[in-house]
Image 1: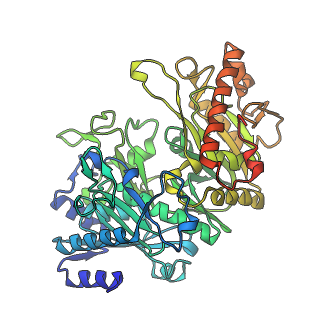
Image 2: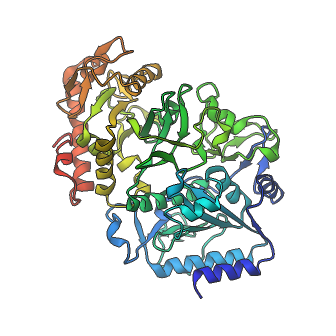
Length: 550
């Protein structure tokens, strides 16, 4: 019996399949079955086990099939191979769990605002909140789109069993051994690109569903000459599209939420011959320390006063008092509290979530060394290089004193979700820049005047002025100087920036020699990471030449 036949048999025999029930019904089911509780604002509060408060990269697998194995970068620690037989075991255990459940929720949704490459996704779960989550973040179903998309014959089916646990003895030697458990892990997030199947077993974190599908899209789209991007996107009043790429803490969400520009989406987009389109129909925002004055859009989307059955925002792992109000500054449960909600809950979004080809792309980095310029214009090869690196800084050990920032590199600003060989994504970016005349800028939202603990963070108003100058094309005609260490072109002036000395980081340090030492240290980290990550990869030599420290 094929999987499709087995699945149909399970659904036909089940006495309580709830397929594409209304949003209000999903909310009622979640509350009635105690999966969540209504908060004072009308949103649904839920709390997951500690092991499900975030993604579990070590429990995330890609099935290694002969058909696709040559297209996947198995040297990346994020692409953990799973043998087909073990995946079949996961499928059978998932179907058995659904078969034994007293209720089954099925949602049919689309991923991709551009109907030519929307992916039809069918999610089956025994948990109402999993169904509601797909309603929050995926796009409504359309029979016409499902028939006309390039994936019309390649639908994807996802089985989500968030609160089940795998039998460690059954999977001994097949899945990883979890040191915390002392035995084989009871969780698995697995995807089979060739069969169009995925399993989320034992993870109640909503992001496991979202990021699995994002990874699937990132694998499928390059095969259709479409570049997938982990970015936010917005559009100006003249129809000019901009993309913002950056890791957590770089200001991607803050800078993309511009009242003068309509938001396409905050996380996942595709770039094809027609332009940019959001994958999703919603957002999954980090909530810790969310300030309603600084982030009113996200705050209102999650916490606006409304009737419970017409709200449906899911608040995951945030501290809530008995009277139903949240304390977003309390991270005792997790610093990764999240809120999912539809795009329609935001006030300034682009209808249709699509735009033309991007005029400007911004790579955001929060450099805590204080040596990366606040803004630099990147050539085609430089853009490909910084895209490959995905650099930012993270701070460590601040509670016990000042320590060196930790350099973080995540290729394409989303390495865990980009399974193909790196040259594929990098070369596609360069080709599209050439074809559409897109300008790319590196914007440092981190430190100036010295490293963390000595200098200070570049002010948000200053960064906004720099970003505005880039988006308005005002940096196209200014003079540039080459940074001798980081090999990027730095403007000598920037409209909206009065004190131009800040544009050249060495000018802001008290001791130029200390700047030089710190900059060369970071350049050496770039070179070491590049050699480790790409030394055996087929990368364009002109791109490799842009690496600092080489």
